[in-house]
Length: 291
Picture 1: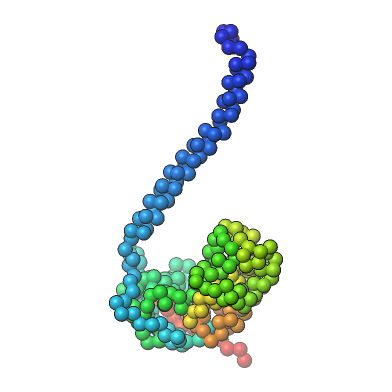
Picture 2: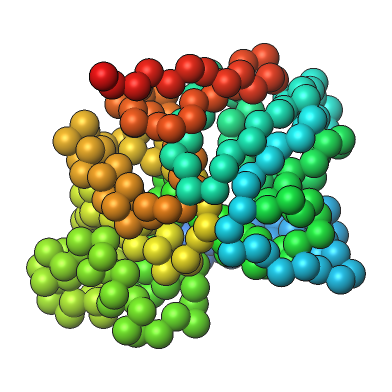
């Protein structure tokens, strides 16, 4: 323009075309970045798929008993590269009892539950169910008969029915509807435009903490466990919602073994057995009975 080699119209046209090109170029760069991230994530998934499982099914697995005492016998366990987490754990839990398990963060409470589900095996000692070592039981059956409800409820993009059937994908529609009714999810179902078939957003962001906990309870009911573990399950809800959740669990899982892990005294109230995990050792605590 200054030297007179460009006309004003050419400059305007160039500026216009440049503006039109910026959007597609930015989209292309964004796509390239997304592909790079996807490649890294896919590599991690493939590495995970290539890992040999540390826990395997026994050659002649025994069926999981319908009920029975849970017995931790002289259990020692430590994670690789770390000090001993559990040292000579000894505890007997009769079937159908409500058990409170407390301890500081990092004491090994969740590790104890991992041993119960056989995500790990103890370095020494035994975990027995109905007098049978867990290492002799069918692994898939065992994990189905031990349900864990944690603080972080996993909800994925899909219908409410699909999320309820997360632990039992082959469950019938009637079974899903029944556990939803028992978990008192009717109010939520009626408020959704498509009922059980209504899609839930990623992580169920439109749901309250109490609704998420009831979905978790419904999942556990569908799983039909003999042992239910609540691992800090009510730590993210208020006390009123916590009371409702605990009352629902006591009613729906009456007669089954319930293990409650929490820092809240209110969550552990009314337990028939109390244990505290301290310095790798499980201590039995006296239960205060009301007069």
